Image 1 (cartoon, rainbow over the protein chains, first blue to last red):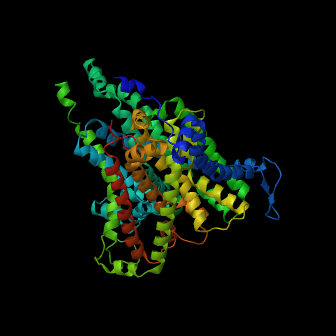
Image 2: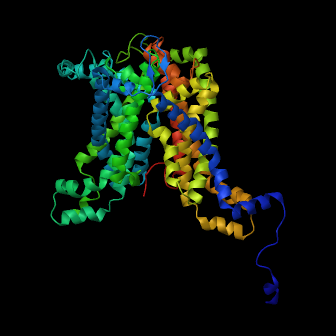
Image 3: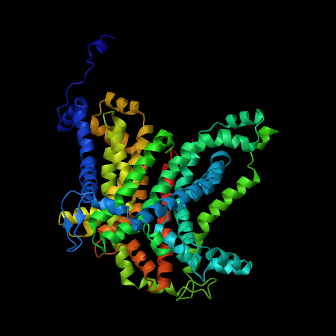
Length: 317
Length: 271
């Protein structure tokens, strides 16, 4: 008994350098925090935010029409150019495409997410998870390439429709104004299908996460109280899944908004925001206008994220 | 009666879910078929014949090997940088509470939340402002920046599960901070870091948008593919490369899944 009483409760200082450093950091948690945070914050702050800031700054400059050089004086003229008919069309076209892609993605993703969240168990759960993860992570360009194979005039889709005697349907669709074109691979319809294909997987996991948090007995209670499955869906399930849908839509919307490769490879010659930025900074050499164009998705996404946050979408991420 | 029904899905739901999954997978399967086609000039379906010839042709193409080697080197170095920075950030955010924590999460996520073209053009104009010539390292700089978030997400999720009392117990038993890190924290977060690293590798290996802005004259494998997509030179070679890329990206994803499946997953799967 007495031996224990004599023992000191604080161990003697062991004196080695590492333990002294360790003790110092333990006593000064803010020093430790600074050491941990400094490298990533410096990297992101200097390389990323620095470049972003420099880009935004350039949107307030203008380009001299005659010399093609950048005029380093503060002006809003470049932003005014965005409202030109041609440029404004590009913005409207891109935003409407992003909105439709998001909507259709949600419709396709919901059943997959719902089944995976509520009915899939054990092996099937894994099957669904990998079934979503593998296409989501597989190569972006290969996915576009696959659709180039499918949508080509001599490709599998035409072959399938010929076999089914439905080729007239495709022709009728392609003869429609705006969404039609010479073939699917040079039409808005083609661009739209590929956008949905490439970005839809990003919608599934957030919806699934939201649905998994819905207690089963809520749905049972709803039907016990006499609701039809449609009513249960509308008044119970859908409102609870909405934050997940909004969270997923952040990805589909943002990714469609900034993409310039898909419409370049599969689509008509009319530009999307991403292509306009690319053309302005590359061949046209008009960095200020390119920078002003990039502000559009940043502002739209800022508003979108603000709205999503109010709807509680971040809890579903 | 009602409770019986809740265990099996309605037929319509089953069909919609199966249809959605088929929509996701059939196009990728098509890639495998086209790698064996004998048709050279078009994307004809069904293929007039099947051959293994294009595998040999692709094997002998030096431009494919160069692009592949550049991609692997860029992805490896970006992954190492992302692992270091992402883990540090995750450790700071999950171990302590401080003012501005939310802002740091936002800052880490921003490079992939904003469209890639913004990151790309911002870096490009910064490089030209600072007179930095395009090189291997400018590509790495861009890739590491958006790979941090993948490692960070995996590490934060794991840190959340490693109970703080484990570390306190280690300290109480006389270990100093470094020993606690080596013997308690690292074994606990190891698999999450490995998974995050693999996903970061896959992300970098596949990246094309930022790379077109930061790459200059060199081609990574995705840039090589992009050029082939815009101006096809030898379609069968592209078919073979596409198939190999699908296989190569599947492996790290499967590995990452098996490394993290016992815990909470990469994104909200499981309860």
